[in-house]
Length: 111
Image (tube, rainbow, N blue to C red; front, top):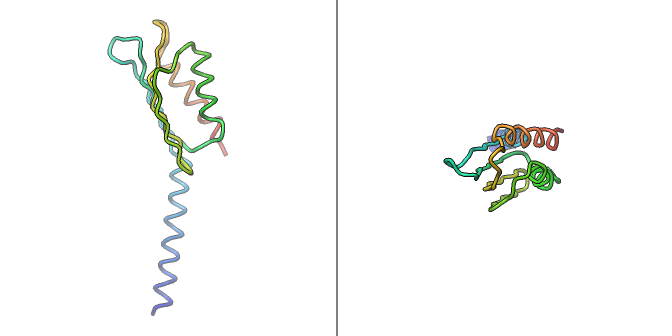
């Protein structure tokens, strides 16, 4: 009886680990929104961790001529999270910025 319970627990742990890794691999969340009539944009990113993702995102911000005012990063073993407040010019489109970040994530985290 103890052996069958032990095997059951091992299988359960294995299933939980597989599901966890599946979820981590498929998380892709990007939110970009203008802050009420100002030139500031709030960006939230959550996705699978990738080595050069932060650098790539910052380079994209630079190319789009937006400046990072404040940023918070959380980097765990498998997950990358960033919240940033950007100062943008009048003509910066939040939709274009959103798509650029999403494309970067898909390119960088594709395995």
